[in-house]
Length: 214
Image (cartoon, rainbow, N blue to C red; front, top):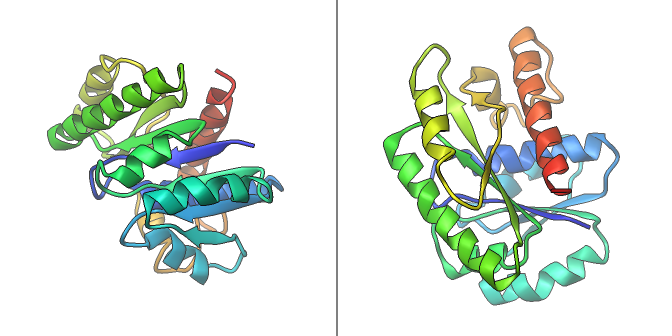
């Protein structure tokens, strides 16, 4: 019964997009999944309320409530995806103290890389308390094809301790950016560009799920 937390203290990292698509991917695999929206902007809950395919979502904006309610959700939902806040707050701490896997999207910019290192430090603290948990995976998100920033970002991320860098890179694609406005996900829209985005996300999520096993 894994809890997968999508976290990064940096706003605009793509947490909600990844969380919603991860939940939809799991639902397509016939997994019983719930999304916990812990972000003040509530982007994932608004998104899920608009899509055709029903995926339950709980809004939790308080760290004490999250610590109390997550064990109750586990009783009904074998898979829990948490969309974390854009800050290193008490809520973020509560999330990493509860999650089985922390999935960290990071854009390939200096500011985002620095922010990711702060997030990793928080995860390290939780790992010391929880004797190695949560497992942590980081990946480059919203990369622009044909630039050196992607490769440079991967090199920097690989120097971070206590976190594994995924080889899969999610590139900036209009097909993904349009999904919220179309009340959908790339798993439900036609088109060649959508198919390419879908393949990248599937590869990412398959790696993430394997990460739960070590």
